[in-house]
Image 1 (tube, helix red, strand yellow):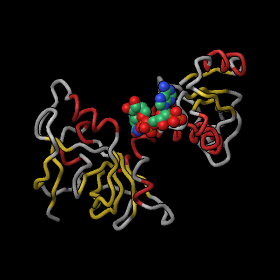
Image 2 (cartoon, protein in one colour):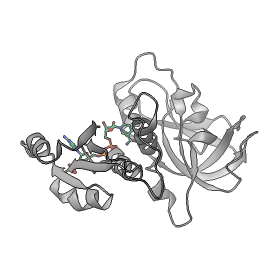
Image 3 (cartoon, protein in one colour):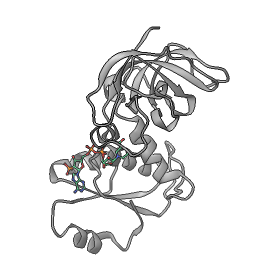
Length: 228
Ligand SMILES: NC(=O)c1ccc[n+]([C@@H]2O[C@H](COP(=O)([O-])OP(=O)(O)OC[C@H]3O[C@@H](n4cnc5c(N)ncnc54)[C@H](OP(=O)(O)O)[C@@H]3O)[C@@H](O)[C@H]2O)c1
């Protein structure tokens, strides 16, 4: 499994395709042969702005989709040949082997999810960091701590406001929140109202309007318990 990566070798540099170490799955890890990669905002922000004390060379890329080609010790939920998406942890682990922009990425089992045959890699690849971000905000201790999502959620009686529901993070968060039994109020451009409602939002307002805050406040503020 000879490997190649798009390396970021210096602050604000262009990416350079070069050879990379062979990926090896450790305990609780898998190796994914990447089929599709997505460029997340965090990737271009790190490349364009540079981060203080950032270690170079590095391999960017958080959102990956592909096939599992190696399974490490103690991995129980995943199997060889499985079609998956993963949140590539990259610098969070401190090793470029965990970055997304390469042919083979090492991923922690906890960040990997299988995808159905009906979902293409191309469509699925945009989901991982967006789901991690939404889930962290909704479920983690010290954050909103709402009930976990289920297929058949019980209404919590709580209403939540998401500003920017048509964005990647907004779209994911709305779907998870609805599946957690929350009533969702959101904002979008008018052209995206139907899209945001189709995700499950109960009320949608136009954030380009100068009076958006007042209109939301007058219409639903009595229901709101949570703002995001
Ligand atoms: N994508 C991720 O995985 C991720 C993870 C962590 C953090 N973030 C951060 O979250 C932010 C959004 O990223 P994204 O990837 O979700 O964006 P995105 O998918 O590119 O969404 C952009 C959308 O945001 C809406 N928008 C633009 N200006 C707005 C405003 N003033 N108020 C509310 N909505 C506005 C627009 O929707 P309309 O056309 O409907 O106006 C636009 O289409 C960025 O700061 C990003 O760095 C993203």
